[in-house]
Length: 443
RNA sequence: GGCCACGUGGCGGAGCGGUUACGCAGCGGAUUGCAAAUCCGUGUACCCCAGUUCGAUUCUGGGCGUGGCCUCCA
Image (cartoon, rainbow, N blue to C red; front, side, top):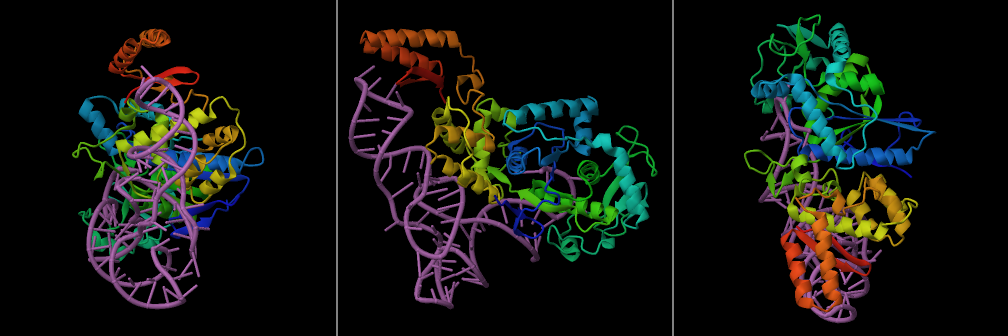
């Protein structure tokens, strides 16, 4: 089946043709580990997880190999600030946040990438790259900094589709005096004693933001690879600069063949921000909702489309999932529904894929297709076990249900209804199905 | 100011130059001691104005509106 992907570089959909069909390579920008990941951070994680699953499906082992690299940025001034603020070490901040991140996204049904490199483990590779950029005349040292010389790259700005003139016209930031050109950006900067630093030809310092991805992608995927992904906000400056560094350093015409960017999301109609009070972390949402519900909500809108994160959407997702899980329960995994695969192959059209899921009559095909989208049935689905316990005593619940069944058997409707109300007051909703009474946490 | 994306039924959200998207809600019915759940049925929408066309929600131009980026924010 032919895979089509929207390429930011060409601003159109293109047929995906891997540089090496035997080895498909993808790099996605991961988190800067200084705070809980929020749902905006979760979007690329989930979107590219779907792409990873799809690529593995389309390029199956052993004839093919798919390598997915997603980095951890563990050197950053925000991390330094957080550590100082809390009076703890930088390592403590990054270790704690990384672990939290892993726990959170695992609950979203996200597969681990093949490689998850950390910036601090690749300082040496970054220094080598910077040296080469200087040697090739694409970078220069100034006052302890090393800067990328933007005018030295004729087609700088191609990815983000902007000319240097445009960028200067819109510049809102003071230009550091040591820059030769206002557009030049930092590859290396000096560190004071209280900041993390590494020895380099330019003194003790730390890397700029962009160089880590250039160094790590080359390290694990090579100088040119297939897909580079992230949020739209990364198109400029981050990806533009990564691309500039890598191409100028290696003398290549491209860094990645396909550049993919997911859209932004809003929360209840407003931009998500701490000051708006609508800042939602993954962790927080997981206290209230099963991870699969968050995942489905995220994928109900096409990844390039902006969308609004609402409680209503979460409720709808939960209903959809309950339906699918109930329908597929107990069935063995069949084939993947071709229509769903085709929808995903059309630039990851997940909304269309889900609409097709509703049409599947065959239980085993449904059970076989759900995992392609990252929904597994063997975890017990959305049943009570997967819900965070809200101080619910399941023993007591079972007993009350038992009592109610007895009352109903005796046609004592008053008592049966009283027990139902009592359960509801405990936050439990019951459903009388053909195979007996089940219960779930009420919302 | 520059660049970009988007504007579809009550809500969410695909898609296509002419045929039912789909889901949620609602409504009607079945079932049920009642309720929930479940099952069946039910919905002719596409921001505005021009243009192209036999025909546009779908293409082109303009307008209006919303959101994003313009140096470290996914």
